[in-house]
Amino acid sequence: MSVPHLSSSASPQEIAGVLGDQGCVVVDRLVEREVLEQLRGELAPYLEATPVGTDGFSGRRTRRTGGLVARSTTARELVCHPRVLAVVERVLAHTTRFQLHLTQVIAIGPGEPAQPIHRDQWAFDFFPFPTGYEVQCNTLWAMDDFRAENGATRVVPGSHRLADRLRFREEDTEPAEMVAGSVLFYTGSLYHGGGANRSERVRMGLNLTYSVSWLRQEENQYLSVPRETAQTLPKPLLRLLGYARGAYALGYVDDLRDPMEVLCPGSVQRGFGEPRTPPGPRQAGE
Ligand SMILES: O=C(O)CCC(=O)C(=O)O
Ligand SMILES: [Fe+2]
Image (cartoon, rainbow, N blue to C red; front, side, top):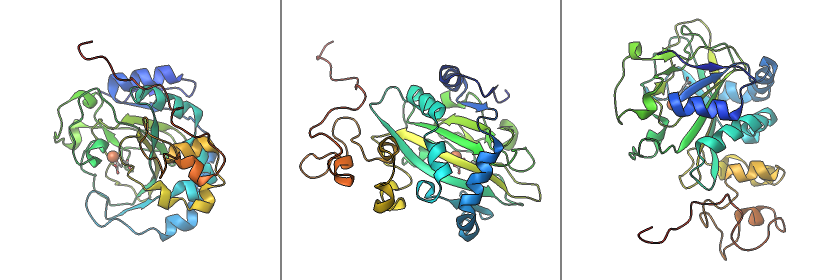
């Protein structure tokens, strides 16, 4: 089965619809390729300074550069891309709040073998989430053209409904080929992995992932974004970083204070409430 593609004008409903059906979808040319070039420029010193991975999963010829909210204004814009957030809101509609899970430029170097096929939600200690209960909605923005040859992400469309802990061979997967500026959306339950880079050049992708706010974030945003920087950021972005209560009370500070109030005193009213309406308790026997 091949990887579904939608045009840049696709609505959040359409994108979320295909995601629900296939577990992955590419939206072609969602931003101009210049936006990703700008990102690359802002991050250049960090990209150069990042060491390669130390194990087969992170990739011994792959550099993973994070902390992107602190390091790049373009990354902030992409984290808050309105269409992306509208898709995430639909895919994770069963929770009261979602959050930014990690920000990472993944630069796969020439000669890197294929990454093992996995589900990103295995990061949560392999907890077997029920099929259909998505805990992550992820994006991978192509900073270069993604081709099978240079390590385009390998995906197994429809695999979000399969059993857990399966193994796949390369021939069971499809390359998510796309031009720079396009974005691959995939759920935390989709089997996928970085492709082998058989080209002469590095393949760069920007991984921005979102998770339900009752799970621990993979990238620690409180320490990745220095407090002084955080205090200058817009509130919607801060809430995505985790300066908000998940569900009813998760993450409160001392005397039931909202973390936003601690970061930016005077900005939030006292007391709980305000997140999206939760499913709420039901009467026993209902
Ligand atoms: O870089 C890619 O194409 C995907 C990498 C990936 O899936 C991961 O590191 O979890
Ligand atoms: Fe992954």
